[in-house]
Every structure is written in structure tokens, then in C-alpha cells.
Length: 183
Image (cartoon, rainbow, N blue to C red; front, side, top):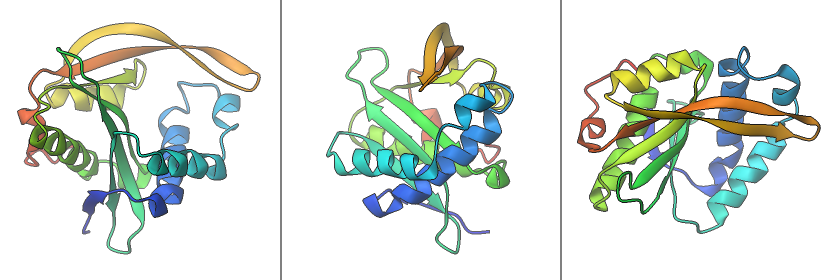
């Protein structure tokens, strides 16, 4: 299977929204309330991504496409201007049927190379504490556990809290290569 990684365009918003929602519903099924996850729609995700892509905000969004040009994963990151961690990987999702094929690793590498070319040499991310598969991958990639915090989740009448942990890479060189295919 051939997967290509490229910068996202506004036309990709429906595909990004689908990947995000399908990934959420799979990865978070045992972590977040089902009624919370059920409140989101593909149309809403499409609109949110369309707005972000059209906003002109300083961000990096890469998509992974299969050989039939279907988006199967994406990564979204932003520079932060922080002395310790100069960038944040805000979102990384791969469709459940495409996980374990190195797509996430390729997306992270694309983000890291983009930041490195701009002189941004460190990255952090937050992940739900109970999302053990993702945490194992970030640890395998050399992420340093930075700490834990509580976040508020909620939409409409379904609200609550969840624990997140942060991982950091003080030097993103380790993320720039594509030799690790386990993600």
C-alpha cells in the first residue's frame, strides 16, 4: 500500500473531519462517555477544519492519503513560542483500519521536519492518560513524560473531566526521520 504525506488544503476538510471523528469514536470508546462522542457529526468536523484551514492562522496540517486519494490520517501542530517547548502537536489521528502501518510516524516526521526547517527544535503534546496505545507509541519515539493535568470536556449537556499527560521532545531531530515504522 502506498501512502503519501502532503500539506492539507481547504478541500481536505471533509476527509480530515471524517478521520478525526472515526478515530475519536474508536480510540476513546472506553475512555470518554458514549453520549459525548455521539454529539459530534461529520458535517460539524468538516466545518471546523474548513474554518481553521481558511483562517490564515499559523499552523501546520499534514494529511496522509492512500493510493486512491482517500485521507486516512492527519496531524495538526502549531508553533508556541515557548523557550522550553517551541511547538505543540495538537492532534494526530489515523483511521482505525490503517493504524499500525507507520502512517502516524510519517505524519509526525513531516511536522518535525517542517518545524526544524523553521528553526523550531522542540515539541510537546498532550494525550488522554487512559489512551495507552498512543502513550506507548510516544514513549517508544523518545517522548519524555512531562506531567499530568485535568481537562474539562463537554458539549451541550454532556460535561466532565479527563486526565491528560504531556510528552515532550527537547530536540525534534529524533522525530525527523522515518526509520521507525511501528507507529
